[in-house]
Amino acid sequence: MTTIRHELNADIGAREALLDQVFGRNRRRKTSERLRADRLPADGLSFVAVDGNRVVGTARLWNIACGSGQPALLLGPVAVEPSCRNRGIGAALVRRAITDARRLGHQAVILVGGPPYYSRFGFTAEKTAAVRLPGPVERHRLLAIELVPGTLNGARGMISATGRMQAMPESRAA
Image 1 (cartoon, rainbow, N blue to C red):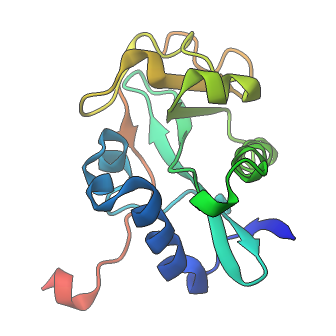
Image 2 (cartoon, helix red, strand yellow):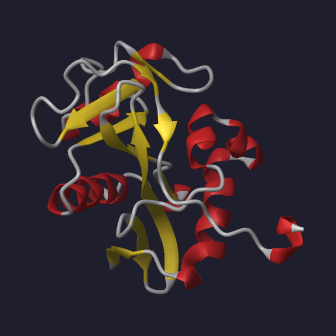
Image 3 (cartoon, rainbow, N blue to C red):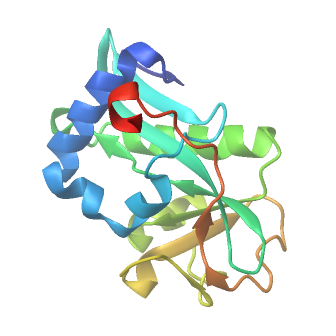
């Protein structure tokens, strides 16, 4: 049986291996990664799907802001182990992420993803027409959902990371 729970430190290695498997080793070159690089995910908003003790899915949310100042969260990456796809795990991760973000008082979530998949959760390109990411992205794939109606009214400009910085290991800090 697969369950969704908060990510633990013990899950990091398995999560990273899963992301490499699903997105390839070049995944860190993606535009969204520029907003996640050297940052910690938003408090309480990192999830894994586990089947027994095995991590088979992941979803994380990150603190961002639109150039015009509206705070939001960035959802991603969302990944499910290929052998576990088509079982609703990805959808369960996205729903849990949205539900917990709303419960914690966040007002909007932005992502880069396929409209056919994410529209069922309420994501659209309606509020993202005037915002940009720090790198190339197909405009129709920049989607948002307002958890509080009107939050992204007038949103424009470059999206930037606002979350806490990740502490660097001493070997990198020197």
